[in-house]
Image (tube, rainbow, N blue to C red):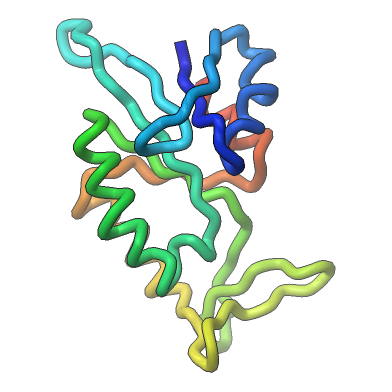
Length: 151
C-alpha cells in the first residue's frame, strides 16, 4: 500500500502509479509527498517517505524551509527518506553556473543578481546524501518520477 499526499504537487502521482498495480490511497501526510511501508532488516516493517522537489525548491531561500522544517520532519517520520529532484539542469561550462531549459534555450539560474553555481547546487545534493543520509534521485519529469517510485 502506498499513501500519496492529497495536496497539489503530489496527488497527480496516483494516476501515474496506477498502471503498476500498487494499491494507493490519497491522504494528507504530515511530511512527504508519498509514503509506504517497506521491509527492513529481518523483514521488519520499514517506513519510507518520498519528497518531490524541483530545483528552485532546493535553492536559497526556499531550501532554508526544506532544511529547517521539512527535512527534520521527514527524518523523524520515516526510517528512510528519498528526495526526488524532478527537473533538468546542467553546468554552463564557461561560467560554472547552473542552467535550466527555458523554451528552446538554456538560461542561467539566478536569484536577484547572484547566479547559482552548479557546484553549490551539486554540493547541497551531496550534503543531503552524505550528511543527512537521504537517498537523492533525479527525474526528468512526472512519468520518470513514477517509474522510480514503483521500481
